[in-house]
Length: 324
View 1 (cartoon, rainbow, N blue to C red):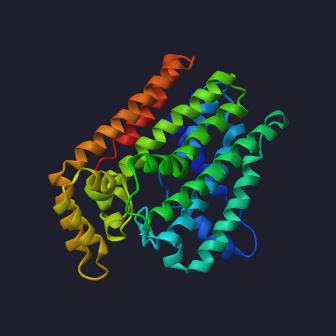
View 2: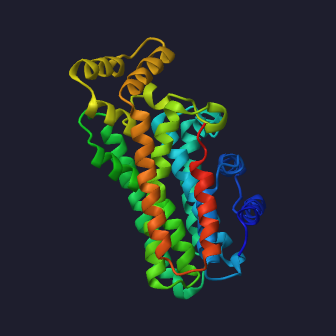
View 3: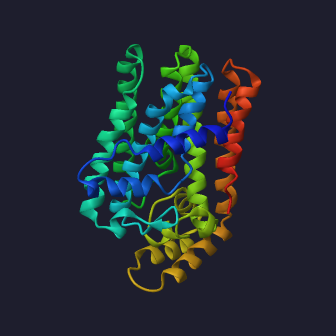
């Protein structure tokens, strides 16, 4: 089985070919910018790992894996416009470097390109592969819509939030694993289990994103710390704080989130102090670990060699080890 580093190098080399680039170059330049900044490239890596569980000719899975990465970056292009985000992976977002029109149109071009790449597979898997990816793509849109609706609500529950992040984040991670297994001809049981495994892993990943937005280091995290607090974003941290706080503390939080002026740093520090008092950081880490335990349990059910599973464990350790 290939190592993680070997697969990453294959993904990097395939992306550097830039075979999707055409005229006018200005349409594709923002896509190159997004794809060229590195990032974790988690989704193509997982697709290739899932494929490699059953077949050694991973080169055949490269273009579908790259297609999933392009699709992921398309969603980020549009999400950053909707959130008016300034930084992505430590660099200016596309709509800040260019403008919103460029980000939207280049995002659309990236989505079309993604499908062209995902279609690279044997004919016997094509229909099911496209159907599965359509389900994932629609779920991502559903998750984003919930996320936007939550912006105007003060009564979002933990259950609603977990459903939203499952749709917005987890299904694409799950779908990457499922697609890699599908085009490798994996047994039906494994094909389903890998999707479930990816769903739990995605939940842990997004919850850790919430945690790192408050307690991370911008030099490592790649985004402004406290950005969710400044933009009044409903996160696991805020939802749990509102659930557990007494009335005085709830009013304090609502007061900070109602303010439209003032020093952002002051707001971040004040809200973080509330989180500290309520031990929200500990609760978030407990929730992350609970989802990781679920992912481990599913992985144990998949009937492949133990050394193959260890590669997945290495990915998890690297992914969840990005503390600060």
